[in-house]
Amino acid sequence: MAVLVTGAAGFIGFHTATALLARGETVVGVDNLNDYYDPALKAARLKRLEGHKDFQFRRLDIADRDAVAALVADRPDIDRVIHLAAQAGVRYSLINPYEYIRSNVEGHVVLLEACRQLPRLGHFVYASSSSVYGANRKLPFSVKDRVDTPVSLYGATKKAMEEISYSYANIYGTPLTGLRFFTVYGPWGRPDMAAYIFTGKILAGEPIPVFNHGDMRRDFTFIDDIVAGVLAALDHPPAAGSNGAPPAAIYNLGNHRSELLTDFIATLERTIGRTADVELLPMQTGDVKETFADIEASQRDLGFAPKTAISEGIPRFVAWYRDYHGV
Ligand SMILES: NC(=O)c1ccc[n+]([C@@H]2O[C@H](COP(=O)([O-])OP(=O)(O)OC[C@H]3O[C@@H](n4cnc5c(N)ncnc54)[C@H](O)[C@@H]3O)[C@@H](O)[C@H]2O)c1
Image 1 (cartoon, helix red, strand yellow):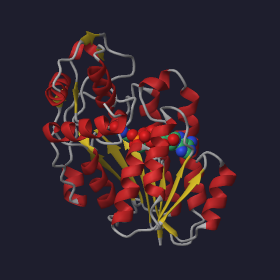
Image 2 (cartoon, rainbow, N blue to C red):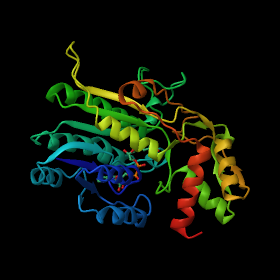
Image 3 (cartoon, rainbow, N blue to C red):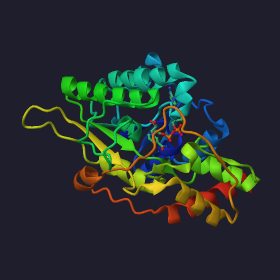
């Protein structure tokens, strides 16, 4: 038995693979190690995984049909998949839209097609995003809400992944679970996200860009809580409904606390011991003003129970940042 983790050199993939190995699983990690952000950070994460005897890494692109088919043929012991590889980021989807279609939509179909050939595939878990809620106004965002108004191409590709997954669960009966992550932060985090950008700039004495003049709220979710949710989801494959509904599920993984961006910045300032020089900017196209996760279904079905407030998570992130960057 082995778990295939795509995006294993990425932020969430690295932590997920680490947790799987810690509980005694065999992990096959794949990643194309692209340069959307500093590949040295991906290499550093990978180095920590590669020391483990139950970890095997394959550098490949999930949209490469031949490479993915060869991997699956070579590893028929893969019985579960955690698909986290994607072109992430709302803002970059305005700059390089085709990469989102290629990695997120095409890559998802290539993986689903290849994994159909696995003799013992029991569950395929994949990353969706709070971005699918787009222009929804009703808070907190619930998996029962309609999501028909993506405001970014990134959000639209994640919605497409959910619908493609539903159709695969329907046609082939494969249990498929989509996880809508809400603004994940923590050690080994992503350099294109607020916590990382703000920390670097505050430490360097540079102004931090704050969009919508700071009038934003985010459900910031600490990485350890996300990983606990991913593993709990993996262990709870959805069953087909007695009414003929396919074995397809969607869950929110968020902290269930919508924090003011200004409070997040104040916590960073207190932790670092410096005041930020704030550059107030207008709202960015594709961004949403507020996110807030309703986690009732994930609590009920998965036992998901996030426990890390930003007052605890931010100091843990900053400590890692200082150590990794030597500042
Ligand atoms: N971090 C968040 O706050 C957040 C929020 C919502 C959803 N997500 C989703 O969670 C997943 C993991 O995100 P993350 O924050 O770890 O991002 P990340 O960018 O750190 O990790 C993604 C990894 O996938 C790899 N990758 C990208 N395209 C690939 C391709 N075509 N073939 C092979 N590898 C490829 C990248 O090299 C990267 O290492 C993504 O699907 C993302 O959309 C993340």
